[in-house]
Image (cartoon, rainbow, N blue to C red; front, side, top):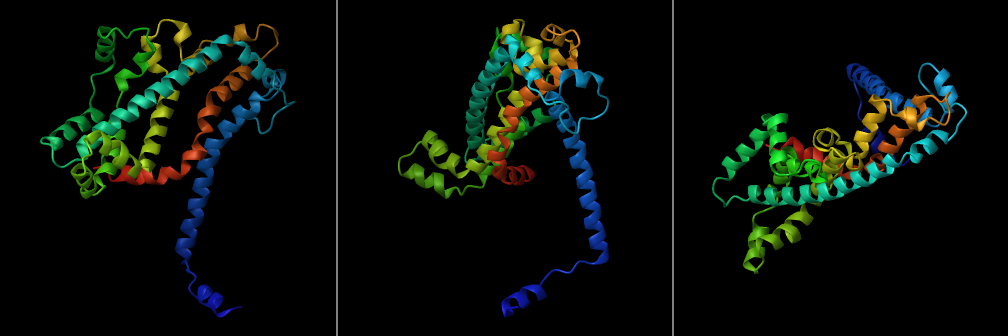
Length: 299
């Protein structure tokens, strides 16, 4: 053993018995929480790939696919409303997230500057809306007065800015030294150039987290569509999924086989609606810590 290795070994942290017990308890608790989260997901995943007749007879959780098959997914994709729901959801996610992020960047830039008057007042008024809002009926009346009933934009415009995301973005921009935008302004840059060429690149980690927050919110949104949309061809994927789960629309999808278990089709539909957004998380995981740190000091 080299001298350096001996020094490193001698500096190894020694935990007391109490700390070791505390660590073991933490591991057990985290393991139980992980199981509570993973088991329902694995049950749905394995059930989706199981033979529908076996799903009908099975009781308890699926710990592995029983007679693996993709027949359930073929039934799901034969339903044209699934593709229509995908297209509507993609439109809402792309258009809504773009609008959300642009407006949040503009609002955060204004609120993060120390120069403009009444910045603290407007910040307090905006934060107030985090805890108190008009409610469902007043919001519906506003949407109706704007002529957005039965429009996809009714899922986007009423929630164009999330107060929490705006405050998180403002906090990130407030950490940028004032000397940078001031120097750029002395060189002839305007506020738009400062925002998108200086502030946004410096806060790209927070921007990435905000993009993910908005995108996930739009992807999972169904209640606004349930309230405002009348035409089923405009329904997002999550609202179609809700109908399948709660209104037993799987009967028409499973008409080819009288013995087919509707539960298998439900499992497959849930997987189809969930996998795309889950696939994005690994690529943005490295930005989560930054986003959480900024959110923790958002005040």
